[in-house]
Image (cartoon, rainbow, N blue to C red):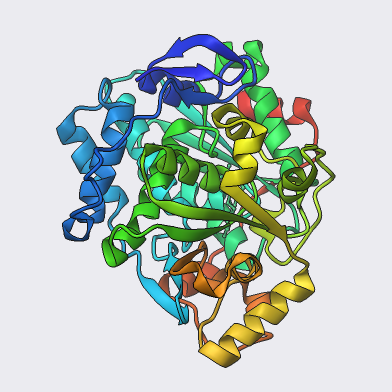
Length: 425
Ligand SMILES: Cc1ncc(COP(=O)(O)O)c(C=O)c1O
Ligand SMILES: N[C@@H](CCOP(=O)(O)O)C(=O)O
């Protein structure tokens, strides 16, 4: 499989090159040159498969020139080493809980897969690599945890000061050694812009091997296809409606690729908070990014999502409108949904999952059959909001320990010169 840039279809990189480079030098995003189709009968016996077996089947065509079967098997076994439970919320609505990994958010899958790929690729290398990552809350923690044990790789995390939750901040700022946190006086889009600028800086790239651990990196983003298959292990091959709480739209784009491979999705429902650029685009076809709005579902506070480039590369406007229904919700509605669902169904949603729940309710008709909401983070990551609903101690032991650790970060303005100096000294 080769990878091209969304800005230049003539560019042709191997999986290994695309992962190591992170972002093409023309500021596009890497895309696989084709989407392989699964055999027609793939879903006939899906109930007998494990998620690791499925991960191998799905990812192998994308990586096989650079990872042999044994390497890939080991990587997917380590990546999919935690539970992906499916819990009933009400009637035919279920939550697929993606937050039982080390950082309590769905990003653990992509971050672990990427870290293990880079570990393979840098095994015999003399040089070091620096991973740049912009986070609105969850990517950074997952990347810090996944890379904290990887040799030869340094991680620099940029996060918006004062705009992540307490637990998220501890997950970004308490790893010593190879993981450093930059606390940026701006929003997520500022952090993402600084990172993207670094990739376009040829002088920096001469001095430092940089790569990205955001969903712009194909090894972060492609494994996110896999958990969309988990509900089919439980329910069989009937098409499902799937709601995806969305911010940078990597998760939804991975789902769209899985659907192109053959995943029987009846309808994708994109769920946004007040950062509603994609739902607005789905109404009038006008992509009009606005400055980021701070919300209680902070990890989705993205004004100009990177993966929109991939969505319009995969499909034309009419197809996008057919494949995705999009809805946006206020903080008030989100909090109300969390309260109602807990009161009536004893299911504790996190604020991101609650936005997804609202979108599912808005879209669904009674006859729509089984629907799945991606529950993308553990509610304990957002205790300032969750404590308005319950007073129980819901912290897992690991999170409690982390909350006691000392925060270490470097404050920075939205200033590329300062960022570059930090990187190269
Ligand atoms: C908890 C949570 N839900 C949803 C999202 C949105 O996912 P994406 O950026 O892939 O759209 C994020 C951030 O990525 C997140 O951390
Ligand atoms: N919501 C994300 C924002 C970055 O998204 P990514 O999938 O491109 O890494 C976060 O939590 O940091």
